[in-house]
Every structure is written in C-alpha cells, then in structure tokens.
Image 1: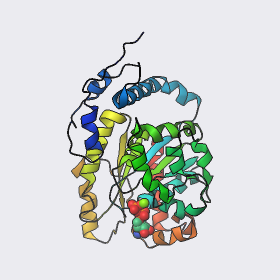
Image 2 (image 1 turned 30 degrees about the horizontal axis):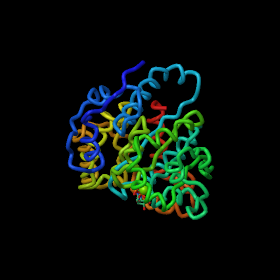
Image 3 (image 1 turned 90 degrees about the horizontal axis):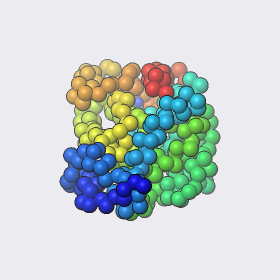
Image 4 (image 1 turned 120 degrees about the vertical axis):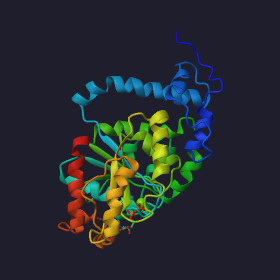
Length: 325
Ligand code: ADP
Ligand code: MG
C-alpha cells in the first residue's frame, strides 16, 4: 500500500505564479522537491494531482521504447514566441505542407483565438463545429472529432474566437498545463508530426503546448530587437523542463523574414545562435511578399508559389528536421 501524501507547503504553489507570468517566487524549485511530494494516494489538491501526472509520465517513458518500435508515435513540436508577427503561423502552415510532401502524416493544431492558421488553411472558423476550444474544455471530448482534412495534405484541429476565454476557464483546473498533452495522446498513433501554432503570449495555452511537446521551434525575424523576449521565453522553457515536461528540447531558432541583401539581417543571423546558445535552423526563410498572398486562397506557399525561394527554404528546413521524427 503506497503511502498517502500530505503535500505540506509543497513549493508548487510558489512556482505557478512565475510560470503564469507572476513574480517569480520559487522559480528555483527542483524536480526532486516535486517528486518527493508525489505518492500515488488520495488526490489531495493541485500539487498532488500534478505530481501524480509527473509520475505517470515517467512510467510512460519507461515503456516508450517498446511502443515506438511497434507503433507510430508522432513527435509534437510547438512553434512558440510570445511576440506576434514573427511567422509562427506561416511556419506551421509551410512546414506542415513540407512534411506532408515528404510523405509524413501531419496534424496542425491552432492554439490562437485569432484563428489565423485555421483561416489560412481554408477553414472558416464561423463554420467550425468542433474546435480546440471544446476539446480543451470539454472534459472527455475526443480530439479526433475536431480534426478536419485540409487541401495541403495536412489535418487541422481548428480554433475559434471563443478560445480567448479558455485560459480563464482552465486556470482553476488541477493539472491545467497537462490538458493538451492528454487530449493529443490518443492521436499520436495516427501521425508522424504534430505542429502546435501558439498564440503570442506565455499564458496557460502556451504552457500547455510546451508541456505537450517533445520539440520547440522559435521563429525569429532577422531584425534588430526581434530577439527581445527570447530570454523570457527560454526562462519559461527551463521551468517547463524542470517541472512539467523534462522531455522538451529546443530544436532551434528559425530565422524568418531574412533579407540576404541587408548587412544588418546578416549580423542578426550571425549573432543569435551564440547569444542564446541554441541551434539555428537552416536555411533562413527569405522575406518575400509571396507569404502574404498564400493565406488568401487557403493554401500554404508550397502550393501557391511552389518554386519560390520561400517555399524551397521551408522544404529544406523540414528535411533538416526529419532526423527528429
Ligand atoms: P505570427 O503567427 O507569429 O503572428 P504570421 O505567420 O501571422 O506571424 O506572420 C505575420 C505576417 O508576416 C503575415 O502577414 C505573414 O504573411 C508575413 N510573413 C511571414 N513570413 C514572411 C516572410 N518570410 N516574408 C515576408 N512576410 C512574411
Ligand atoms: Mg499566428
């Protein structure tokens, strides 16, 4: 009979305000602190619920090699940067189409209430019957029911404007950071790649994405000041790795909107990897007006401008990432 936990003063409560954008109290709590709190016994509040999930995840990892050899298990990758307009959505749509061209089975998930990915793949959010919002809040609603097939050879779980209220509704739920991970788990057998298009924030939905993912790609325009905020994102990643998802790996910074004629863009590109000690994905995605045209017809640039440098750059980045899938 395993001992029952009384989570006396578990540091968890000190950690959460920081992760949720609060004052940073308790940010140095170790995984051991949390694991010490986690005995499978009666559920006693949030700390125990989350710590139990950590334990379940470790058990999952032990059995993972056998599962991987026998069945497909998608690699889940978050495209995140709390800045808006850095090409998160463009990169999810374009890399998704590139992986599909390479014969991979691809699922894209729109985690932004603005639903730009949903629009840009030709799905009208006003016509969506079931979205990621219902899947996250629905308690027991199967994510499979929300999947729609799109023209670019990828599947999509669409978003709707109502997702804007999801953060507030998730906040009081125990284990709120694990909701996306658990709803996507049954889908991992059906796909090779799942790409998560994050909203421009470090709120609960982005924490859900980082907790659900094996990989993180950080799109960053090659412009002055565009790296501001990356440090804060990486602090959050460190917290997530320590507490919520030790499996999370930063696959790299994806340089976007790169103007090869500009010395400044070259300098930013040369500096960014060293500055953060992270891999820089290659090649950089060139700046071209073709990207603005693609969403209007509900297809990615890989279809609307097949031979453009932008389409080819995303194909090359996708090929460089194949080793991860
Ligand atoms: P985010 O999802 O990070 O907010 P988007 O993918 O919506 O960013 O891109 C913001 C804007 O930049 C869009 O209008 C998009 O068409 C444009 N854009 C994206 N990538 C490029 C690029 N390589 N060159 C030129 N414009 C781009
Ligand atoms: Mg976006």
